[in-house]
Image (cartoon, rainbow, N blue to C red):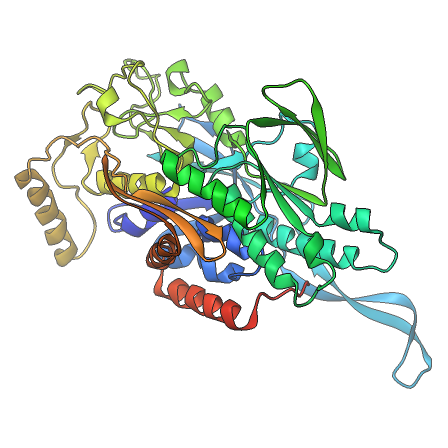
Length: 507
């Protein structure tokens, strides 16, 4: 979200922008739950990275190492295939006339570089880290290996396939009722927006599956396991209660104040935080929607940065201008102040009220901003404007310099200088601190109902639950799609699902 917003706003006449990412598309992540059961299709909620800004260069790969002193990063390029090449194999096969032939032709992936680990070193002037976080499931035995996740399109695709296979496996004639109950028990670990929306989508899917699996639909059920006392802790207390009531009305079993102790192939083991007895929940599949952890690149980067750059939860601690905190930078051998910025889930951003004019944090007041798409998008646009205005990021606060000399046509040069003058007229010689404008939060709970908490900063504007909240949820999600193409595709997906139902085919 943060990188996508930066790509949309950055002025490519002033900068050469190079984006490194393991995927060649942007995902509208709030709708991954819907895509995992076929409510919308995967391609409807994605936008090609190159389409976001055709003037931005894109490299498909993973950043694996960095040297902040020399200002370089090492990128492992994605093992892309050159295509399919016909390969003639010796052997017998049946010809069109029924006679045996001596050779068979098959198609195999071909890449002359296959099997080689390709690394490329890239030098930068400013490094913007916006790689997000991974789902954290490693602390619970068996969770990493046996749980589905919901962070990428591939995760939603695997989950959608697994749900369909669970139904078809349960429909086999040799299955007894106990095994059918287990196979069609879907457990979701985590009661945040992702877990709750997935539970709602699954209940809609189960209700609709009665058309094709009339004997199995009564056996299917969903359980949400939440470590906190309530669901959706980001919402007001009244809406949290509505979320639990709405899910339970649709048959979802909500287990709060419990922890997962172990995940096995056919069950999970949970324990109440108030008791000592463990409980076994037989299940067909488990989806892990609880907790995040930094990606390996961030951990490696933190090892090469001063301790001030590490937040309490192992993210990149940034100042009010989203520069990674490097402590006192005095000597020429030190890391250049302002050469590394961070935004999105990977950035530990304290609220503006917790920092003074020099960006020093008051630990007692620091409450990090939530790790949401809304925060990330605003951070990405802020960083783009910070760079476009050419603030001196090595000073505190960053100060405006003279217009940057660029090799461009006269019109571009004129607008560059005019923009610099306009920023000065507005009194922005020093860069303003990043300030997050909270617009609220939404979550669908299934059955045509949703929770909507609309805010403007600290002011509560509207709280809605039920069908009115669902109408607001759909309206906002359509508007927030990144392109007109996505708005049209998602709208048609909703219409198609309402008329024809969800597509249960697997490939």
